Length: 216
Image 1 (tube, rainbow, N blue to C red):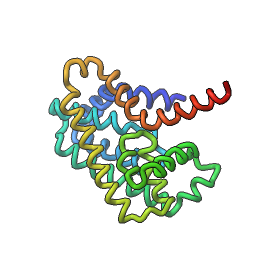
Image 2 (image 1 turned 45 degrees about the vertical axis):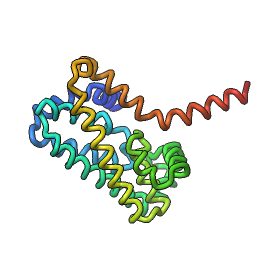
Image 3 (image 1 turned 90 degrees about the vertical axis):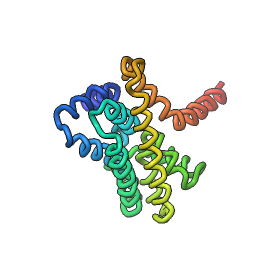
Image 4 (image 1 turned 180 degrees about the vertical axis):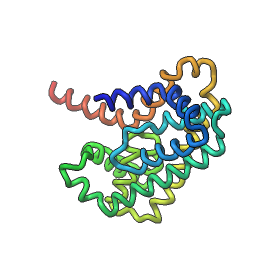
């Protein structure tokens, strides 16, 4: 419970925490950001880590001069691409065993929702999923399980990684330090999270509504 509360606080007040990390670790902050983005996209057990909000906040701090925006873009694009690649091969070699093992903490509903994304969008899911928390982590894993050829996967992976990091980071860089955004940073981060999960939440909401109507 304490870990969950910490993560919620970290995500909603990511500007404060990232500022503390920069002041404490200086240049090593780049390595920390790289590690978080890599783990969030590359390990199927960590879909709860901040992705969009972290990129937005990093861009905002780059606009202040605390970080270098070019370094942020290059390093985090590499982290995102390597993360998805790692997750793909985990799914390819171990996916079926991990999903079938009841002791492994993988939420089966997340796998199902991600599979629906694939059924609807095909290989483009790897690109679209970049902007959907949780699905972003499971998409390459499911692609590996489904034996999508790596040749096709890597092209979608590179395109998606570049678009995601550039869009989210530059959004923070250009808009993160507008007075209204700075004064309401936590609300903006919350809005970013809500907008990110809409593609996944809307279909779920529609299904629940249909079930309620049938019961009535």
